Length: 216
Image (cartoon, rainbow, N blue to C red; front, side, top):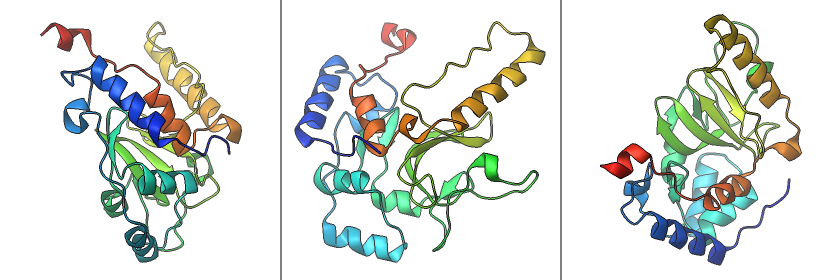
């Protein structure tokens, strides 16, 4: 894995720029976090939570919530404070009991239902869309997202392939979607995003403000 260091000054500078570009907080989720981060968590408390939930947090994420902010401004929503993330309990993702690991969707037996465990919630976008950090399993340290329309998780990539189905006839769309998901799942580790990759990628983007919202 690369890019596991994140600079606090850079983070705060980029958040300040985002705030200047979106002073009315019109970008999705901005009205909630207002481009601010919550105070960092104390290490003693974090160690207690890790012990309580039997989890070893990826080092870059752990450093972020200890030194920069324990939740707040993040992609399209807000970064869950670690206390809330650990308490998240839903079939699409949760820490699970000690020993629970994340199993890739392409390694689950056909017709075998299994709640997704070994996942720490980063951002919940609603309607079963959410980003998670894998904290147990061979995908440890990478960010995976849950797609509601596909009912499964896929890795978040640095340069993801585009999914183009609008111009396809209805009977060809499902086939194109399946090929796209297979391409995502076949990505090499160096193409996947760590927490730091994921967060910096969002920091470097200008806030997206829907033209319809901006007009009103």
